[in-house]
Image 1 (cartoon, rainbow, N blue to C red):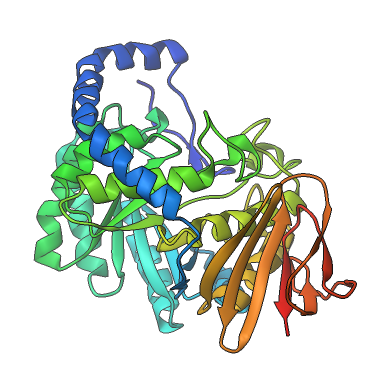
Image 2: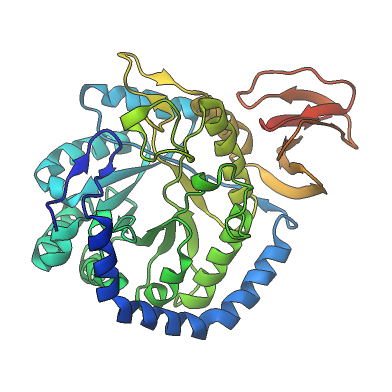
Length: 422
């Protein structure tokens, strides 16, 4: 295989292996895939039974939403102070920082950045990124992991082991190869008293979880649960909406792990139209800035209101092709998604989810915060007028600006609105 190459514009590896080469390697690991099928069949009944229970019970029980909002950040050199300022403006306290194995010589830079985050009262999760050399040279990977744990023990709350490894461009060709990477990390974790997050599977490929969860006692179970190729987060993939995917994922976690674990979504975004080489995807997944902001709110609300996801990290704060801010101007420009997340954090963090109102074509989620009751609502299609059964005191748009309404009737659109009651 050709040498690993990093795409500095889209923050991901180039897919340098040809389709023919990838197909050849998949055939090579055919026996491993068959073993996964056999293992998953054993778990099918308990998983599906629990899935139905979770699916049928979603959005029906009140629970408190503590502090589930996270944003991924990267070292920004002279603009590190700007990172802090903007995180504080959003109002979040949880961050995730990627540390690539091939940038081991820059660990000092990452250490200073992470210490800066901690000094400013941010919790830091570190994601350890791998490439093919780590798989082919286990000593190299073990040395990197040991070095990271030694440097950041006591500084980072959690360490996510591996990243999107079910995509060959990230260097792992088989789940057993990933298992070796995480087993190496596990051997050092106890010595350094660190907590592990994983398996960091990207997209809707949940068949990879059972065998890994049975073998590895992750402290938190993570997914890079992108749904951008389906467009809106309510859209289905083979009949599976985001809500159903979350229910299935939690059912797999609770059925297959050594004991129930909390579920984290450690990466999600929608890439942006018109950003060219800076977009991490091409074609259909790309959306307008307004759509990205709408989908961000809708995704967070759908997942968090289920009661099945403890935490979600948006990837990431600053990036031309998908970030909450565009780094190309001299002064970073906040996008609509920045303001949308800020408003969401302001009104939902520390609130209590109450229930979801069922009405065809509408998504209406009810919350309370102190003495204040509110609804967060949008449509999945054309705008509709909806009359609430309670007196409406004010209505805010996605970015927290007041919008007009008539008595208790509110015009609901695809862009989320906050409706407050007297």
